[in-house]
Image 1 (cartoon, rainbow, N blue to C red):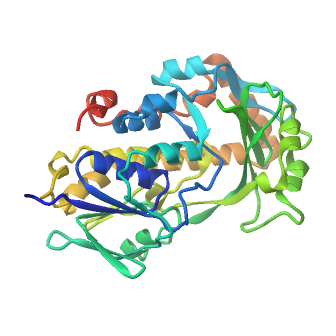
Image 2: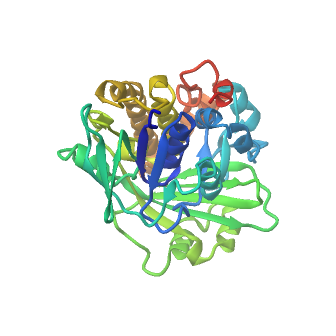
Length: 403
């Protein structure tokens, strides 16, 4: 009897769990090593565009996640005083890209992905290090505490500060500070009724979005020195920066407790990697192509990575696959150009939205309004060539039913 091919995934975030689920679905024996004591995700919510939802179709949970969509009416871009710069709607987004945009708590998606794996596949409190990337003649090796695991495939899904990436490409400079910091909150706001929106001010932005479960997800970003923190607490910092902005921002801030606020500096891979694989080891998600959150594509690209890695290699679905250089080179060829281009667009979007020059911001706002009057909302145009991605099969939903 042929032994099943073994895969070890380092990192139990959204990308790592999706990769593990995709590999399990195609016949691999999968182990996920997560250094945290639980799978409780860092971060409040995640935005899933139609491209990410199509990747979830391949895993069989796309429609379940689509049912969580809360954005039903108008939305768009506003100024701090409340004036709309650009408006769009859930219907327009679905018509343009063939599906909705879904915002949901990260914990919900993590739970759904983890449920796709067999019992015991995920080991928490298990920091891991790549001991040997492997090659065609020998398996890769991973150290996890006192244990050493051998595998035909290792997936590095350990985030922006990836140790696996450092082991594969030690001369790469690693992540760079993007020049701004972010705050995120997920809170109930009694009686809140508003259109989903993002608001751009000089050097600052704010987004407010209702979720299906009745809570509100809000995020903010501002240019700031790396490592800076509020002298008192981060709620107070948000009040100083955004407390006089348009409704419903003051109401959201009133509902926030200091302990609800998650602040994090944004780092990205300003220099692309030469490849996303070496030997029997691949990189996925932020470990491969960390990008600013300005297009909301970090998680979506990790989901794309996961299904592209697992499913096109039909010859690797059962034991005996090599997961060698030629096979993983196809993964690099499929993913590196696309993710590099999207990361660059995210950087440009950040520069546009975060400019601190008031004169430049005024011109930006005028151009956005004019462009949106002449055609589809700028908010939607920014996803052209991104949200319309489809898995490299005839249909993600059709493939979801295959084993």
